[in-house]
Length: 462
Image (cartoon, rainbow, N blue to C red; front, side, top):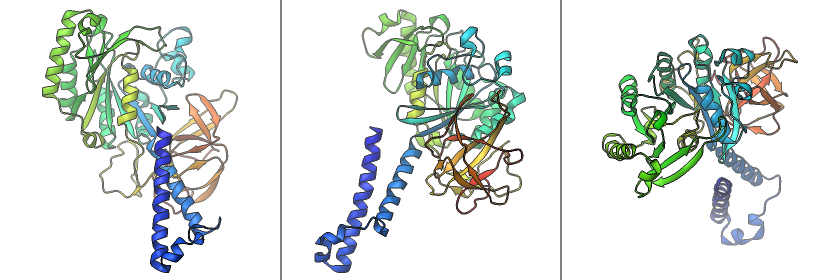
C-alpha cells in the first residue's frame, strides 16, 4: 500500500505537468501544434525532461520524509526505558531476542545499553540511536539516559527528535526527572506520547495517574489503551478506538507476548475470557466513565503539545508494546521544519521554540544537518570518533561534499558515513533522508556539538 501511494502521487504529478504543458502549447501555437507528435516529445537533455525529473525527485523526497518516525524515549531512572526500547526493537523485527539492563546471562546484553559500564551498573549512561524498518516506516529510536548526572546528553538528543515517549512507572507515578524532561520536550514543542509501564506489578489507579499528569503538566490526557486489572490480576488492555480487548498470555522473557484473544467489547464471551467477574464489571464501568469524562483525540492539539495519548502496559511482559508501536506509526509526526538560530546564545539546555523563527523545510533540495552527539572509542579495536548527525533537509549519501558552518564554510567530503544500531556500525550504502541519523567519523577538532553541515546557501545554525 505504501509503494502504491508513492506511485500514485508521482503519476498524478507527472499527469498534471503533462496537461499543463499541453494547454500551454494550445495557447501559444493552436490545436494543430498541440496534436502534433513533436508537441509531446522531448529530447533526453531538454528542459522539459529535466523538469519532469525534478518533479519526480521532489515527490520521492516528500514520500521518504512522510514515512520517517523519529522518537526519543524519556523517563526517570528505573522506569523501564531501556527495556521498552528493546521491546520496540523486538516487535519491529530489528532483533530476535530483547535484552534488559537488569537481567542475567544473555538477556543482559541490551542492544541500546552496549557500553561495559552500562552493563555493569544496569543503567543507561549514553544516548543510543537505533534505526530499523517497520510497517513501511523508517523508525529511528533515540534511547536516552534517565539519571540526572547524564541529563545533558538527553537534552541534546531531544533536539534531534520529532516525537517524545514519556515513560511513567505505574507504581510511583510522576518522578522528578520525568518532570524536568517533560518541560524540555514541551519547550521544543514535541508531540508527546505517554506509556504507563509496569502494570504487571501493584500500581496506582489509572485515574490517579492521569490526574497527576494533567494537574502537574496542564496537558489534556486521552487514554487510547486502558488496563484490565493490575499486578497479578493484569489481564490485558482495552483498545478504546476499536472497542476491543486484547488479552495476553505471559511469554518467555525476551520473547514476544502471546495474545490469548482479541475480542470485541460487546462479545458475550468477554467475561469468561477475562476469568474474573469483578475485573469485567470494572472494565464496563471504566468504559462509560472514560467516554463521558475524557476529551477525544485531537491530532492538532497533539502536534502542538497540548494533548497526550496515554497507553498502559508492561514492557517486561510485552503487554501493550505492539499496540504502542502501531500507535507511534499512525499518530507520530514525520520530520517537521527545523528552526534556524543565528544568535550567540543558541543551546540545547532549553531548545525553546517560540514560533517566530526562520525555518528550513525537510523537503528542501539542499542538504542540511546538525551534530547533536559525539562518541569516542565505541570500537575496542580502534580509537574511533563518531559524530551523530541528524539529517534535517535534502538527501545525504556517502561521499557528499558539505560545508561546515563553524569552520567558515570549509568544504568536507563525508566519505565514511555509517548507519547505527546501538554498538553496531555498518557502511551507509543508500540514501539518508530528513529524520535519519548518520554516524560520521572525524578527526580531533573537526566536529563539535551544535555544528551545522550543509550544501547550497549557508543557513545559520540548526
